[in-house]
Every structure is written in structure tokens, then in C-alpha cells.
Image (tube, rainbow, N blue to C red; front, top):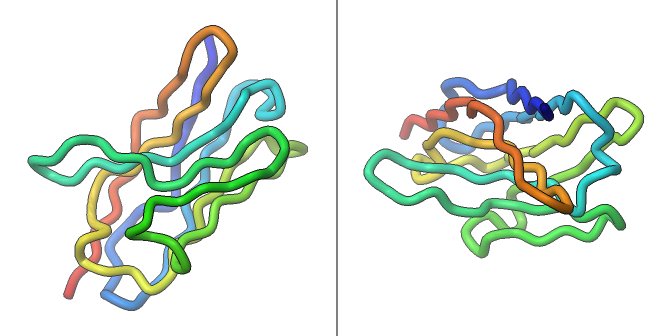
Length: 115
């Protein structure tokens, strides 16, 4: 069973930065893509950023220019660098691994941005 463990969340003031990490229990290169999602209280889970096996990336419009997704296949870890954070970035951030047969999710890490 694939396990994904997120870390790096916390409380930060608006304008600050955080870097989230997602450590996978297997080779990250074995997935079609890996992604970050977030869910704010009372809202649906939304896609934030995705990185494919080839290294192509895509971002939600709300985070373009502020967030950057990257991966280190040698460490089986995916990162989400978040800069210029806004209160609306607050939420539970989940790591997602898109396999060829099924998808996998981590337990999430909380990000809270104070104004």
C-alpha cells in the first residue's frame, strides 16, 4: 500500500512563505503525476498544483506566480513552495499521487495564514 506523508504546514502571517513536503513510500517516478490539493473549511477540495513524470507543471489560477511544485525522485518527495501567502490560502493541504490504476492520498497538513 502506497503511503504519502505531508509535512511543513503551520501558522504564518500574510505575505510569508511555507514549504510543504510529501514523502512517498514508493518511487515517485512510478506515478503519472503528483499533485497538491487543498480544502478550506466549508469548501470543496480543489487542485492547487500538479507535476507530471516529465516535470511539466500546472497551477490553479489563484496560486500562479506564488506557488511552485517540484519533486526529487531520488528522495521520493514532492514539494510545494508557497510564497506571498494570503489568508485565502488557509486550508488542509493534501498530497495526491496519480497511479496508473488508482490514486493515493495523504492525511493532509494544515496551513493557516493570518491577516
